[in-house]
Every structure is written in C-alpha cells, then in structure tokens.
Amino acid sequence: MPQHFVISGAKIATLVHEAYGYDLLEDAAIVVDGDTVAWVGPSADVPSSYSEFEHQDHTGRLITPALIDCHTHIVHGGNRAREFEMRLNGASYEEIARAGGGIVSTVAATRGASEAELLQNALPRIDALIAQGVATVEIKSGYGLDHDTELKMLRVARALGRARPIRVVTSFLGAHAVPKGNDADRYIDDVCIPALRAAHAEGLVDAVDGFCEGIAFDTAQIARVFDVAQELGLPVKLHAEQLSHLGGTALAAKYSALSADHVEYATEEDAKALAASGTVAVLLPGAFYTIHETQAPPVQAFRDNGVSMAVGTDWNPGSSPLGSILLAMNMACTLFRLTPAEALAGTTRNAARALGLKDCGVIAPGMRADLAIWNVSDPAELSYGIGINPLHRRMFGGVL
Ligand code: DI6
Ligand code: FE
Image 1 (tube, rainbow, N blue to C red):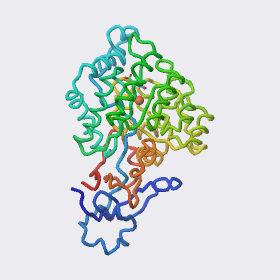
Image 2: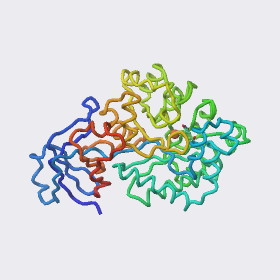
Image 3: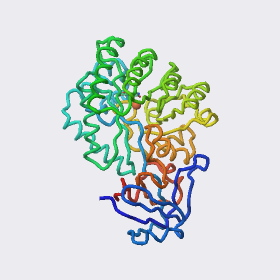
Image 4: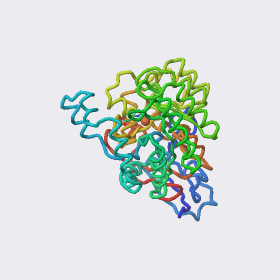
C-alpha cells in the first residue's frame, strides 16, 4: 500500500532542468502522497499541512529518480557462456556457428522453453535490476522469430511486471534477425508483420523495434514494419548504426521514433535529424565493450545538436551479458566520455523519454514516487564506482 511520507535531510538530484545537470538540492525534502510526489524543496520549508505524514530522515544520503533501464532483452532461453569460452580458446566464427552458437542458439532455447520457464529464468535478472534502484525496465521480444514465440516472450514480459514491483514496458522486436533458411523479405511480410498485429491485438506491445544492419534488415524492410506500427498507433524505436552506417538513424527520425539505439556509426547529419525529430540516442556501452567495437558514438555531435542521450544495459545473452545499470553508467563515462551527470540523466529523465513515459524519470510534484535512495554523498559516485552498489532503499510508486 502506498503511504504518506516526508523524506528530508538528503541531497536530491531532481534532474528536472536539463541545463542544470543533476539539478541538485542540498538538505532537501520530498513529500510522497500515495503513489505520487506532492512537494519537493528545502527541508526547512516543508508545508505544515504535511506534518501528519510519516517522517524519514535521510541525512547524508542522495535521492535520485529511480533508475530506468530503457533497452533490454532479458526474456530469453539459455545462455552463450559456452560460445564465449570457445571464442577465447581460439574458435572461429564458423566453428561457433557449426556448434550451434550465436543468436540461432538463443532462438532455439527460447522456442523450446515454456512461458513458466522463461519467467523463472528472467526473474533473477529483474531482481538484479531492482536491487540497483531500477523501477522501470523495457523488455524486447526478438528471440522467437516465429509467431507463437514472439508472443510468448511478450506475455512473459508482461507477467514479470505482475510478479515483481517494477514497471515493464514492452517492445516488439520481430525484425531482430532472419531465421535460418528464410528470406528476409518473406519473413517480414509473412511472419513479422502478422505477429505484430496479433501481439498488438493481445495488448502485448508498447512500442515496435527493429535491427537495421547488414546482418539483419535494411531500411526498406524496417520501413514496412514501421508503417504497420504507425497504422496501429504504436511508437517505434530502432537498433541503428551499431556495426555500420546503413541509414537507420535517418529512418528512425523520419518516423519520429522514440529512440535510435547503439548509434556508434551515426554521423553529424544523423545527430541533426535526431534533434529535429526529438528522438533520443540510446547508448549501449555493454555491447560496445563485449564485441570490442572501436567506433564510439558521436557524443559531442549529440551534445552540440541538443540530442537527448540515454544509457541502457542492452542485457542480452550474445553481445551484452551485462546485468548492471550502474556499470552501464560507468562504462558510458569511461568508454564514451559521458559526464556522470549525463550518465544519470541517461538512466532517468532521458530513459523515460526513450520509452515515451511522461510520469517518471525526474523528481517533481505530480510525478510517480519512484525514487532511489543512495548511500553516497556525491552524485558522481553512482558512475564512478565499478561493480559497487550503494543503493540504500528503492521506492516504487510510493512503496518503500
Ligand atoms: N544488437 C545486438 O548487439 C544484439 N541484437 C541486436 O539487435 C545481438 C543479439 C545476440 O547476439 O543475441
Ligand atoms: Fe539490443
């Protein structure tokens, strides 16, 4: 049951004003009324009308909006540790593929798992994120690549949101890879688009995603999926410019996408297009790190053009087996040169934007009371630590 709290004495990174970085208040208070933030300001100025509310002193702590992981693939069967080991023992890509490795192996494991099994596998991943102050997580389909398994993955994602105190936002990613033995165009028209319509009819889809890449789908194929998304009234997002420059970012901007994700190979011109469409650039340093990518996303061009940047884990069994949003923030700073304030904005305000959510990601009156209370005195500590979790408590919808 949501309660009524006055939380005082803490530093509060409200993240409200983009120009002010953390937008930090010293010795500040938050009034939580039910599931909503009612008031924010100096501890000394809490209106007396709230004097009956339960009081909590958090002197010496930092409060931020609860974190948001805006890009994950945490519903999937199996794992690819064996393949990781084979690669480090010198196996070639072909040898790994012949041994049944790669995305195909995750598709097989996901098809073979029941809904209950997929749920059991994903719960520890959800719990790991919750333990780091995450209150909203995006989860994609994309390891089914057939009608039934794509819908099964999304049902499991919805079930995770009922099984745990966390908000789950789903993305339909039928256009993730071409299943073995299929033609890409026929797969899009005969499997992906009908599955999208069926998933939408079941209420399973919050947004539509795709993988625009040489090893996946080209812009014309993605555009066909996006046209259907538009017809259904669903927002779109896109894995774009991860391994090469194929024009996915410009396509995402053309469709007013919520986000363009990865974007290592995006250009200055792409940055201008994202700015014009209000599309968020989602940076995923876990994949960059895992695949030893050397081309970093054009962070300065994003800054110069006023593109909002978010940061996610991309938690998936292949290119980013990264289960820590805090480590993703550290990597975004170390590998991509984000400032710690940008990294925190990337997992709060801008991550909310990347999901089209307007009621979370900042601390302000009227917003959901999704908060993270940290045992740190300086907000930079959240990005500075490597493998350290300083969370004290998380509040989800007013519930501690
Ligand atoms: N980009 C990636 O890096 C992953 N998917 C995507 O769209 C790879 C997924 C995998 O290898 O399982
Ligand atoms: Fe991804």
